[in-house]
Image (cartoon, rainbow, N blue to C red):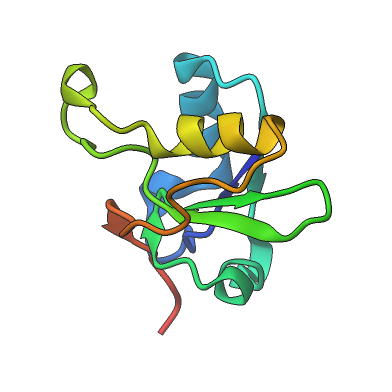
Length: 112
């Protein structure tokens, strides 16, 4: 698993790579956190929000696109953990039941 920050730090200074590394450490992220230098990666996937999740199978075919779960504002109220369910299905050799949901979050900050 990796996270890629697509925001342009010139447009959104609070999302500089150094600031995001600090946030990742505070949150205890145990996965790679990368910067989309030049904003070349996110358009290839069609990402529009942060977060916008893309789950690829072992052949690197996208199997799920969308939100992390069905309640971005209250973790205790989540009834459908989309990412967790998609990963469980793929690990069991199945296709995820839910393959697309609407990404919820802030828009990606791009150069104009």
